[in-house]
Length: 328
Image (cartoon, rainbow, N blue to C red; front, side, top):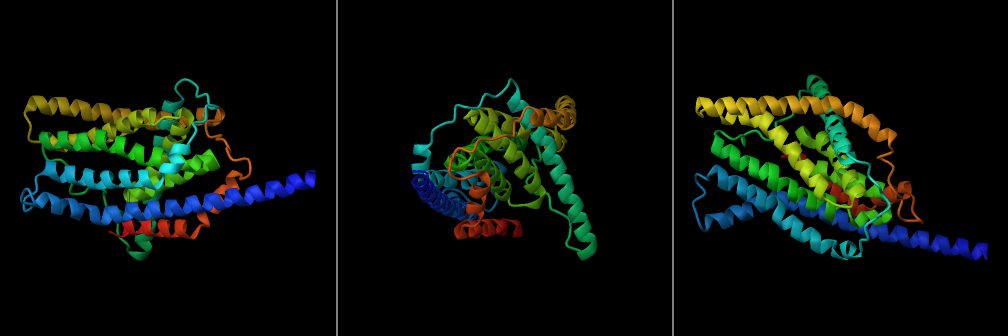
C-alpha cells in the first residue's frame, strides 16, 4: 500500500510540476506583453490622439494621460484574458491572521529596505562608472517634472491615484493570484521582481523590486489589494510632494509658495521618519514571522516551485526581454 501511495505521489508531483511550468510559460508571455506594450503602445495612442488634435505641441496633461492609458489599459485587459482560468479557480487562503497594523509595518519596513537597495545600486553604479566610464544612473522622471501648480495637479493625479490602482491590479492581483496555487513565497517573489523589472530603469529597479515584495506580502496576508493600494498611493504622494512640489510652485504667489514649502517639509520629514522607523518595524516583522508564507501545494516545496519557474524556457525568455526596457 505504501509503495502504491509513493508511486501515486510521484505521479502527482510530476503533474503539478508540469502544470507550474505551463503557468510559468504564461508568465513569460505576460512579460513579453508588458515589454511590447511599453515599446509600442505610446506610439499607437499617440497616433489615435493625432486623429483628433495636433501632436506638435502636446499639452502636459495630454502627455501624462496618454502615458497612463498606454502603460496600463492594454496590459490589464490582456493579462486578465491570459490568466482568466487561474483567476477564476483562485480560492483565497483564510488561514492568515494579520496582527493589527501589520500592513503598515510591512509597508514602512519595505520603504526602508527599498531605500537601502537604491543606495546600494547607486554605490555599485558609481564604482562601475569609475572603472569603466559607463555613466551615472539617469533620473527616471527626467523631463517629466511639473513646471507649475496646474501641471503638478495632473502629475499627482496620475502618479498618486491612477498608477497605484492600475499597478496593484496588474501585479498584486493578475500576476500574483495564479502562482499562489504553488506557494505564496513563489508568488510574492515573482510578482515583486516583475514589478521592479516593469519600471524599466536602474533608478527605480531596486526600490520597486524590494517594495514590491513587501506589497505582495501584504496582499497575500490580507487577501485583498485594497490595503496595499492605499499604502502604494501614500508612498507616491509622499515621494511626489517631497521631490516635485517645490519646483512646481516656483512661479506661484507667495501665499501658495508658503503652503507648498510646508507640505514639502512635512513630506520630506515624514519620509525620513518612516525610513528610520522602518528599521524597528522590520525587526518586528521578522519577530512576528510576517515573512513566513504558506506552501499551498503539498507536492511542490517553495524551492521546487521556484526552480521549476526559473528553468522554464519561455519564462527565461520573458525575463531577458524585460531587461531590454533598461536599454532605452
